Amino acid sequence: MRLVIARCSVDYVGRLRAHLPLAVRLLMVKADGSVLVHSDGGSYKPLNWMSPPATMRSVAPDETDAEAGVTEVWNVQSAKTDDRLIISIHERFSDVSHDLGVDPGLIKDGVEADLQRLLAEQINRLGEGHTLIRREYMTAIGPVDILARDASGATVAVELKRRGDIDGVEQLTRYLELLNRDPLLAPVKGIFAAQQIKPQARVLAEDRGITCLTLDYDAMRGVDDRDSRLF
Amino acid sequence: MRLVIARCSVDYVGRLRAHLPLAVRLLMVKADGSVLVHSDGGSYKPLNWMSPPATMRSVAPDETDAEAGVTEVWNVQSAKTDDRLIISIHERFSDVSHDLGVDPGLIKDGVEADLQRLLAEQINRLGEGHTLIRREYMTAIGPVDILARDASGATVAVELKRRGDIDGVEQLTRYLELLNRDPLLAPVKGIFAAQQIKPQARVLAEDRGITCLTLDYDAMRGVDDRDSRLF
DNA sequence: CAGTACATCTCGCGA
DNA sequence: TCGCGAGGTGTACTG
Image 1 (cartoon, rainbow over the protein chains, first blue to last red):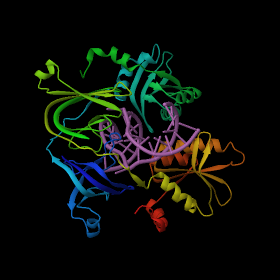
Image 2 (cartoon, chains in turn purple, cyan, orange, blue):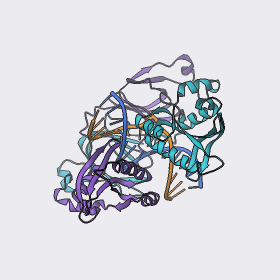
Image 3 (cartoon, each protein chain N blue to C red):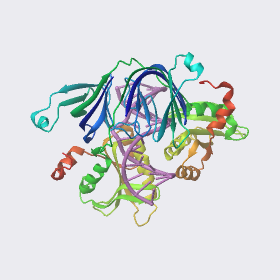
Image 4 (cartoon, rainbow over the protein chains, first blue to last red):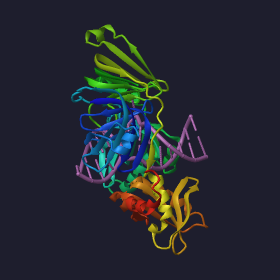
């Protein structure tokens, strides 16, 4: 990895066009040829970048650029598309390189997959007497997160979200429409389950006869604590 | 901005939990207290990070950590939430700081707003004899991208996307439902226009009587080339 | 401030 | 490889 702090301007041409006026920025060149242009603010998203795989060639500026104060031009070309990033460097303030090696990668816990596993194990949170049919029940338009049966034997389709939004209600509605055409399953009830359900999503869901269920992930994980896998 | 290359392990606790095993990485500390942990690969997304506003405190390791080889612990705390990033540093290989100042920011061209402007100017791409009523036609549930009239005088609602997805079809469907309740506008036809339309979205749209239109942005921009505004 | 829609989204999973 | 959905999404804009 190479880290350069330089006064530069940047132009991107590809899926769109973008331009960064002259300023001091961090240029990060990774081992796979990708380049990130960071400012001293914003979030983790760079001001501009080139995704890997890419190749970076440093060339001399043409006469016009040289007269404008450009000392060096980085031509970053995507290997797969014709996306191009052109960095015109006026002055380099710092330039360090270091070999980082391959990273072992991130271990996550607490994403939707974990919620789904926990809810499948604690299926009674849907209501007394519920039984699991299966997780990721495949349909023509995508997988239903959880398919279950309630105490009366009726089919229940569960859409699971970390944050319950209108989109999730729409998604569940499409599944319910489809599932209810299947005489072996119909009638199918819908449950919209999330750690947090937005008011507008709740209104829309209940208007469509969908039950809303707020999940307490900490409590569910607490029950599961016998196998705390990470820590 | 401070750039440290160090052998470290990282733990994040917040909306989820995540752990990074010991390895050599880049630690970027920005002026607003945000911290980015980058490896020498992947795309622009860091392995882990803390969003601003945040505060970074470097503390001495406790006895257990010190025996494990930790020389320094960075405690990064979000100012708004109780998200926390803990970086246990074993060895620092490089440590440079530089003042970057405020960035003038990115100028873009070719996003949905540009597509919308071009389609409004080249409204005949909807079909011969179409006339523009207006862009961003406001309704109670949000703005319709383009409202037009076809050769026969019927109202046409256009939903515009860079990439046509099912969500976009749902959005247009909601607009059409609402617009068709207005006797001054009804009957309203729907056109789903995008640079690329996903097969499932196309099926759903046509099933609902919505016309799909694939847009060639380069061709549309070509027509508009008399005022290439950026370069 | 919240809510909404877009993104050069990125990333991971499954067919 | 492609399609699809999730994300600690981020980001801009609107009310």
